[in-house]
Amino acid sequence: MEFRPDHKFVVARRFKALRRKAHLSQSVLGWLIDICRQSVNEIENRRVMPHQTTWDRFCDLEGKHKQPRMRLPTVWR
Image 1: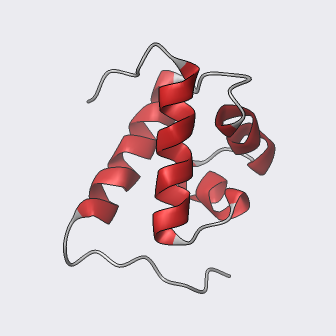
Image 2: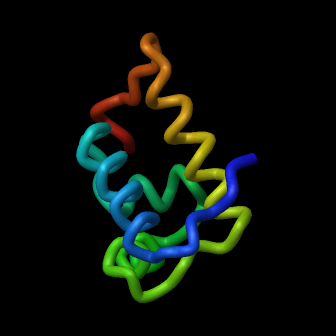
């Protein structure tokens, strides 16, 4: 379990970086980490900090995406 950064800017930058690298929409990222699109938007625009459980799910997804053989599908639903 990784500690959540104190600054909203750092969290927002990581959310955006993963979304861009994996070619995900805010809706799909939210679906994968079990939050709504609006929550992803608020995190990325530095309005709120994610709850610790949300942060943990995000870090799990981020870690899986960094694995060399892990490929997220391009078509989601």
